[in-house]
Length: 509
Image 1 (spheres, one colour):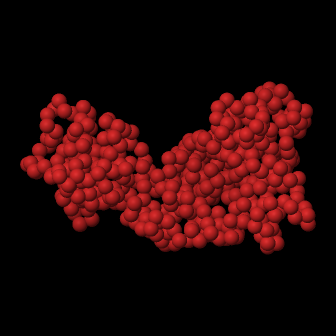
Image 2 (cartoon, rainbow, N blue to C red):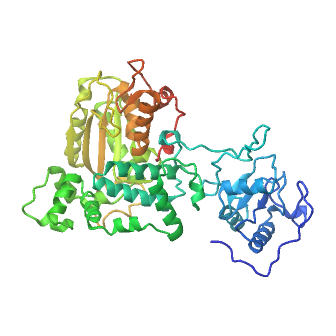
Image 3 (cartoon, rainbow, N blue to C red):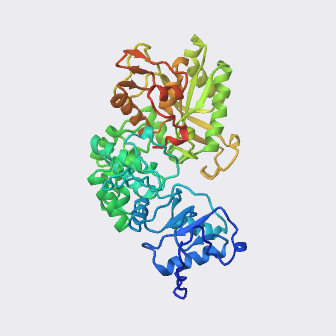
């Protein structure tokens, strides 16, 4: 929350511009000598600027009345980085150093803490346009802040869990989901890409000028962004959330084993609640759907990292009992740093390919059944062929042996918070996927199963369109050289594609 505006404070009289001039009362008042702040008056107003300057100085910050070469941090309100640079150009001010461009929220947090706080993506104003002076016959002037080019591909962007634009990304996630329910693939992809690129931005969109130069934002998407900026919400998103079909599909697909076709069937039959679906005697459910209904309350609650780690210990104990040299990696959202998820995925591989490995998942299922830890499982046999070319489809499923199961996690195996557990229950049903892949394909499988979905889609799209290669969870094929490219690690796959390596926690696209 911004500090209250103070009408009784008048701005200090301007002094002649001095490089490095201190405007605090004395040198002893300054606690943070390496920090020199200039507050931009544009869009803020004289009174508010003077008030913030006074507050900051009382806390020991060095704040200058005028911009000089000694300034390390420029603070602005309701301005983008582009706006700040435009102001510098209009004022014909040249800054030889490269000061940080920051939103006023950073300074307010500093004042509240009484010391400098860490600068994060939500504070930084990033410049995205070329400010070279085309009218000047001399060489282009270097802008004080480096221009950042944003790629259309998620695999060339670093996307952490620090989302500065959640009000927009939540809206586009809902619109994408609605298009998926209606099997409108083109619109679904449009909204998914928009949400993905906005998640990667290290700054918050506060005006339409901030969207300039950002890829994947077409006219329809920008119209929605503009409406949210002006009204705080999107009428289209509001309509979707109130749409009976969307609400029904959202509810039906929350059941393990229920997809779009079944949801469409139930909706056309007039069902709108799960209780009506379950009580209808004419409907026949698959084994998976029966299990989905039976353990519904547990399965729709989030899986915590503590629960995922507890499952991981039990998976490793079971697998190593039969295959001691196996490598077991937790993949999916938890590998990308998420604290919560809806299931837990594991990739299993072993250097020694034996018949024991082929029977591994069935042996693990038998062991868990004897121990009373297995509530449901569906074992899908491998159809993997070594010489098969990778799939050209960006959403293609792999052909490895895998098991989709519901695990009975004992309460005493979880170390921390159990607030999501039903009162009185000594166990919780957890969705778990186990994937068994050949050792020489482990890097491709690990990359594919880590996600996120949009990151993987764009990685495969990049391989096809930019490198003339085909990538999936099994292999990477160079169409020009007509050879399979081997990789022992994810880093090698990125290198083959000519990409900088992106850490798992930076793939939350």
